[in-house]
Amino acid sequence: MSIQWTIVAAFLYAEIAVVLLLMIPFISPRSWNKIFKSRFFKSLGAQADIYFTVMIVVLVLFFFDSIREMRKYGAHRDEAQSEYHHHGNLDVEMQQSMKMFRAQRNFYIAGFSLFLWLVIRRLVTLICAQAVLLAVNEASMKQAQSATEAAQNLLKKSDNSKQNEGNVKTETLEKQLDELKTELEKARKDVSHLTKDRDAVKLQAENLSKEYERLCEEHSKAQQAAAAGGEPSNKKDN
View 1 (cartoon, one colour):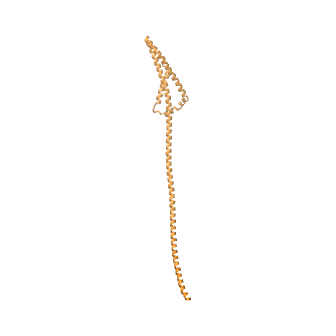
View 2 (cartoon, one colour):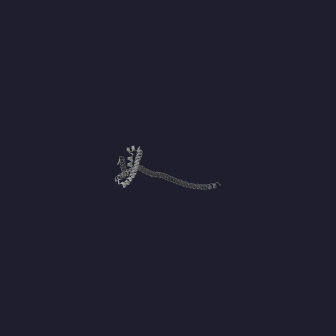
View 3 (spheres, helix red, strand yellow):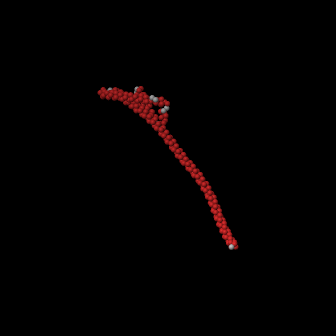
């Protein structure tokens, strides 16, 4: 294997290792996102698109070169097989078959390297997107929990305020009831005093009426007595 294809094969093995590493289930997307946002990857991220494009171009060139070799050695192998049937040259056919095998091997190496390079790029993008979605989901859950707690606190405060308002209303009603009781008691006392005064006035009126009747009787008696005493004196004068 030549040096350039050895490098491409090593790159393929590295890609396989990276894919397996990215597929490990117990490493969370958040951990990968932290790694991708480290200083080292940030320094590479500024020129990541350039590196990706360069590697794509290099792998595509190797891929087309392997296709060219396959077509080239395929044609030579057909010629070698026809010569073998005519001349029986087995060594030439074996060499052409070996070159064809190497061309096919290089084709698979370049093809899988190109494919895995695209897969790695896609995996990194999906992992970063999943990490962002998890962070957004967690933030939304925290926000929802805080909103729920705030709503519960508001409901508790509302219940407490209603209870306080009810207590205040009860105290106000109790005060008003006490005031009404006091006024009622005062009114009862006033009515009692008025009743006593009325009874006293009534009794006094009855006494005055009796006294008036007595005086009238005495006056009547006095008039009768005066009249009775005046008649004999008139008779004597006559």
